[in-house]
Image 1: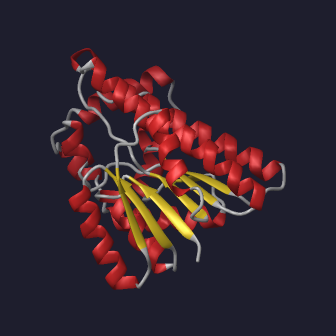
Image 2: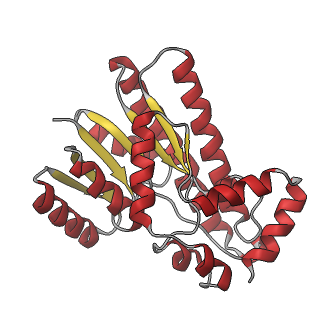
Image 3: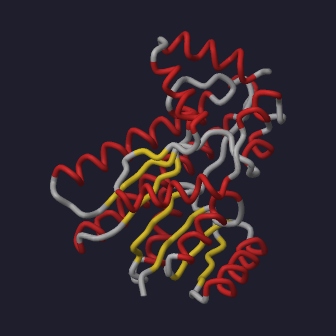
Length: 256
């Protein structure tokens, strides 16, 4: 039986990914810090789909933690890696705590990069596997109030597309995708410290359909998966603006 590893699996997209992959017959390894939440997800998924679910309750921020997670799971025939763990911070950048910003960058970038590197080597050797890196709509343009978070997701998106191209151009069957959702009905907005403004309420969508589109896109080999028409339209409109103009547009919209 092949196995899928999902990080950040205690809530939101992580829970959705666990259910979707289990429904496709994958045994699961799910990681997050909140053991009680992981245990709940594990019970629900195992009972519903009859798959094996192993939980790992650890903070995977930073390179050393990523290596530890790899060492714990490398012999489990990981066919799918979902790099979902991450968080955002909303505010003027000068009002954000420097230590927390650094922790965010470690998780959103360093951990994701290390896990991708380690598991990708194994997947390329067997010429089989899938890696989804969760980026964001915020990675397409400068994002005032999400300056560091948006920057981290721009890295994830460009990194993932570059890997997808390297693999395709060298004939590998391994697939890498960047999943780029917009505002979604998860814990993200509240954890980031943003209020549910008029703009958020007008553009927010449900997580499960987006997660399902992401998994299906990954298996089809799409380099970027952006769910929902409103997100695609927004990205297209901003594409035709200068970065400065795009940032000004976001600044005005996001505060409404």
